[in-house]
Every structure is written in C-alpha cells, then in structure tokens.
Image (tube, rainbow, N blue to C red):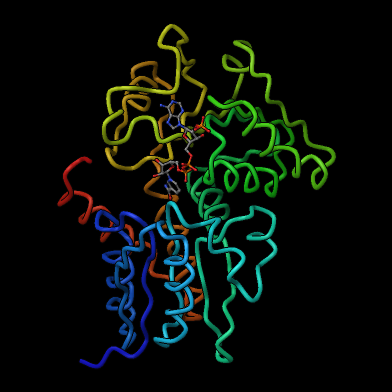
Length: 288
Ligand code: NAP
C-alpha cells in the first residue's frame, strides 16, 4: 500500500504513545487511503533538534503532526501561524501543514478536555473548579474551563510562582472570572470539580497522589485525573473509595486526537473506534 499522507507525533519519549494506534484505526475505519500515523522520537538536546524536526516535517511533505511532552511550547516560534487557542495557551499540540507549506499551530487539549466533560454531562458554568498543577496541560485545562464559562477556578501548584504565571494572562482575558492561587482547605472541601494535571501518580510516583489523604471527598464532588496510565491512579482510587465520581484522562486523549484528526483530514473523527483502539493499546502497555 502507498502511504502518501503522513502524520505523526513528535515528543520524548513517544514509544508509549497511544496516538499511533488511535489514528491508524481511525484511518482504517473511515477507509481513508494513503494515511499513516507514526511515532517520531525527538530529543530536547540540542534544542536545534526540535526545530530541525518541525521543519523536516515540511521537507518530508507531512500533512501535520501532534506534539507532546516536552516540546509543546518549544515549537511555538517555528509556526507560521497560530490558532487563537494555541496563542492563548502558548502551546501547540497539533501542527497542520497547509497546501502552501505553511506550519499552522493548534491546541486541541483544551477542547479535548471540555468535550470529555461534556460526555460526562458536566457543565462547569456555575462550578468552583480546583486545578492541581500549573504545567502545560494545566494551562489548556484552565483555558478550556474559562472558555466554557467557568467563573471560579483555583490553581494549586508545588511551585507557586508557576501558578501565578499561569493565571496572570487569563485574568486580563477573562475579567469576570475569579482565578485564585491561594488555595485553602475550604476551597478543597468545596470544589465541585477537582482536576489533577500534575504528573504525580505516573511511573515512579504511582503510589503517590497530589492530595492530603486526611481530606476526604464528598460523594457529590467530581475528581478528574488527566493521567490514563495507570487507568486508576492512587488519586482516583481514593476518590472512588470516598464515593466521589472519578474520571481518568483517556476520554480527553481521545477527544484531543479526534480534533487533530479533523484538522488534518477534514473528516469527522470516528470517536468510538479511536477510543477502542486506545483502550486496546493501553491493555498491551506495561504501566510505566
Ligand atoms: P508538565 O508541564 O511537566 O507539568 C507537570 C506538573 O506536575 C507541574 O505542575 C509540576 O509542578 C507537577 N509535579 C511534577 N512532579 C510533582 C511532584 N512530585 N509533586 C507535586 N507536583 C509535581 O506536564 P504536563 O504536560 O502538564 O502533563 C502533566 C500530566 O498530564 C502528565 O501526566 C500527562 O501525561 C498528563 N496529560 C494528559 C493528557 C490527556 O490527554 N489525558 C494531555 C496532556 C497531559 P512544578 O511546577 O512544581 O514542577
């Protein structure tokens, strides 16, 4: 078979990524000929590697690529244009290479997250949401929440200055929203939705959680963990034990991928097929 419509993912590491399984299943399921999605490991050092990789996509006539940790912010200056969302978040997770060879940077993480909330019938408009973490994914989550009309968000991060830097630009953009970084015990007890965007709970921190175990959840609280490997983190297990609603990040992964798929192909993504492929690929992975 001739593959002449190439897309893929650049990041480090990418060998564990579920995206190749998800996108190649989507191409197959819609009978899109010539499309293929590949994993492309790109090291951070020297920094010129990332630039070479991005410009290499154009030279190799790729249709686009996903960008994952740790390059989402690094690739921004190499884009010819940015979508409004990518500019607001300051990070790109999807590159589209248009017919003129221009590199267009998008960010589908924010809408991927809120589309998954929508799937779970969660309307954040009148909610107080507590976001744990202030890294790249936290920016997308906060922007997604604000875009959906959420007006009360608290951000807690180990490094407080990063939480301050995260909320500052959004304070100008979303003037009627309350963005708090001095998170109290009451904020934690009263938050309707708690979102973990830290990497605590993955790989060598699998036994840990970003939450004090003396602080019990109420059954009406919702706990969302962006981590999907392991599918039930220590944090989600704790939430479940407290009878709170617990959701992992697989739905967000599928939705951000579905949005990228549409940007590249112009077709509606076969979301159910992509979700099955991601779940199957996850079963074949070791927890890392
Ligand atoms: P990142 O930019 O590196 O940010 C990591 C965050 O975790 C920072 O806030 C960091 O705090 C915090 N952190 C790390 N180790 C910690 C520790 N030992 N104790 C307390 N806080 C700690 O990473 P990211 O891109 O935001 O990704 C974060 C997680 O989200 C990853 O697990 C990633 O797989 C997941 N994710 C999932 C999806 C999805 O589609 N489901 C999408 C994107 C990301 P400091 O600022 O203090 O260092």
